[in-house]
Image (tube, rainbow, N blue to C red; front, side, top):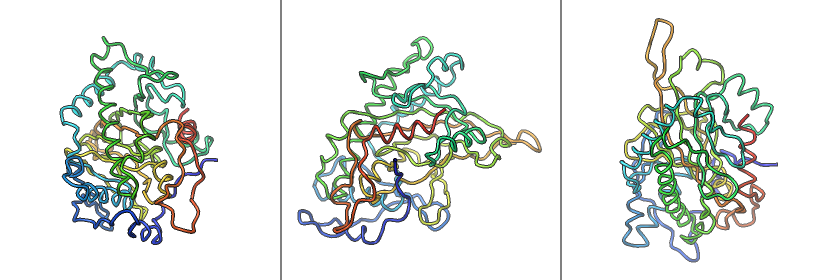
Length: 371
C-alpha cells in the first residue's frame, strides 16, 4: 500500500536536528529574505534569488542560498525562484506553441489521447482527470462524475524512451511544437539538477548527492489550458479548475500566466491562499517523493487552481477568462529507491515511510487519477 506524505508541521525535534552543527560542516545562518505575502496568518512564499547560487563566488555564498531554499520548502513547501537562468523568450516561446496546440481542432487532439499511466503521455480532454489526495479509485470516479477538473492538458515525457513514445501532432498542424517542447524539456531538467544540488547542500549532504538519482530524466512536461467557463458551472460543490492535491515527484517547476488562480494551502491554518503570479519567477514546490525522501522535513503542500475574477455576461451569469500554465514535474530515476535520507532522521527514531520506487509510487497515483 502506498502511503502519502503528511502535510502536518515538521516537529521541533526535526528542526533542531537540521539546524544542529554537523561534524563536517559549520551550520549556515539564514539571511534576510524577500517574500510574497498572502493575506491570513502572514503566510509567505519566499522569493529567492537563484543567481546567488548559480554565480556563487564561494562555498559559503552557495550554501547560504541553499539554506534559504530548504527553509522555504520546510516552512511552506513552495518558493518563487527569480534569476533562475531560463530566458524570458524561452518561456514565451513555450507558451506560444502550447496555445497553438490547444487551438487545434478537438479531433486532431483526440488522436493523441492519453492511454497508459506507465507512459503518462498524450492529450487529456476536459473532464477526464480529477486530481485529489484520495487513493480510492471508486471515490475518485464519483468525484470526477460530480465535479471534474475543468482543464485540458498535453503530457510529454523523455523522447528517447525505449518503451513509451510521445504523441506528437503533425508538423503541419503545429509547426515548431515538437522542437520547442523538446528544448524546453531539457532546459527544465537542467534547472532541476541545479535546484536539487542546492537542496542537497541545504540538507547537509554532498552537493552531487542526487545527481545519479535524477539523470534518467524520468520527468513529465505538462502543458495546461483552462478554457473560459460559466461561473455557474464552477459553483457545484467540490468543483475547481483543478482540485486540491499534492504533486508526486521531487519538484514541480510551474510557469504561469498573469491570470492567476493557483492557491496554496497554509500548512498552519489549513486555509487556501493565492499564490499570486510574480513576473519573471518560477513557482517551485516540493512533491511527495521529496517529502518521503526527507522524512517530511520538506513539505509536499496541497494546492489547487480556482477561477480568477469573472467577466459578467448578464445579471445572473459570468464567464471566467482562459488561463495557461506549464508544469514540469521533476522525478527521480524510474527505479530509484526512495528511502529516508540520513540527515533527515532524528537519532533514535524510525523513518515515517517505507521505501518505494519512483515508478511504483507515481504509476499508482496516476492509475487512480484518470479514467
